[in-house]
Image (tube, rainbow, N blue to C red; front, side):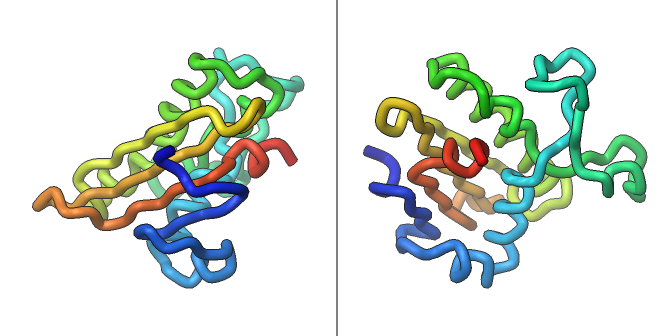
Length: 147
């Protein structure tokens, strides 16, 4: 399995609790990007009538700049291959700003089923020389978006 066991997070191969992970500014930026609710697109299927999203987007210094991910839209779906592909896509979309701002040159996102109803995720950020800048692995992102 590519991912840590249980409900754990690894940062560059070391299991950490979320409080410790938050000490690193780059890890914190990735966590906020993935687990802050980004406003739903007009054509997204939503669990309710509101498109929700982060209120700070209304004051973005760059027009159209949006923060967070749409992972929250998956909360009421069954875990299928399509759901895992959308999770990968939503994670990549949420982290694109790290490439745009020159923090990383490439970002790899992977997802796989965790148990019956969970999704584990791997996020790897690469430097220009193809060395790993950050390797984050989440044992169960499903529990983070199903609160």
